Amino acid sequence: MLLVIDVGNTNTVIGVYDGDTLKHDWRIRTIRDSTADEFNVLANALFSYKGVNPEDIKTAAISSVVPSSVPILNAFCEKYLGLTPLWISSDSVKKLMPILYNNPNEVGADRIVNAVAAFHKYKTALIIIDFGTATTFDVISEKGEYLGGAIVPGIMISAEALFQKASKLARVEIFQTPEKVIGKDTIESIKSGIIYGTASMVDGMIEKMIKEMGASPRIIATGGLAPLIFKISNTIEKVEPSLTLEGLRLIYNQI
Image 1 (cartoon, rainbow, N blue to C red):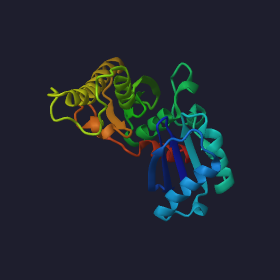
Image 2 (cartoon, rainbow, N blue to C red):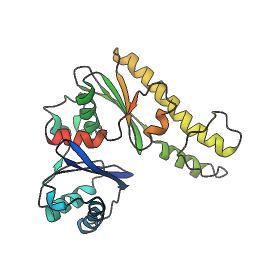
Image 3 (cartoon, rainbow, N blue to C red):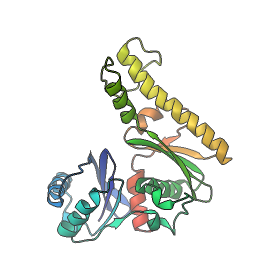
């Protein structure tokens, strides 16, 4: 079995593959000050619940945007699984995807993984939106080149900034799409502004990127809040919830 882990600033996604099949996956809060022993306790609880035997895990691939996670997960893999994980970077995909960033090392590992997985599946020009701590746009050419993208504050970051800086505004949960854009009270107005505002931003960015590309890309989305925006976006064609995990598998196997 192959263990794949994507460490984001807010959440960590873990998956276990048996061959090409994703058998199980979990989304947990990213813990920055854990130890290998503590992570092992958590991982074993998740594995046990789904009947996964850690002794069956023979390989691992990890992407991370949290530097402090590297020694923790390295130690976990070496101490408890008896293996050395593959850490994803721009060097990991040199044979798979040219990265045309000015400095390829600046591209986040999660963005690289998403790009490889998406192009492998669709084989065409793409714009990938990942709704995570930040909302990222990644642009792939028809030839499978990583062209670049954009990074904007994520939905939850934007909401939290609003609640912190506007003391009279109530904190609201952002998990459902309001029925109407025009809110009739403060809570409805906040939800509308954040959710419909994000969807409009996404559609506007996509329109400008397509014009700049001079191509007709497929538009796909991933990340925890992708289904929320997909419902009201005019441009997103499909949500790929396991895109990052699939990219980790493909890169480990070099497709």
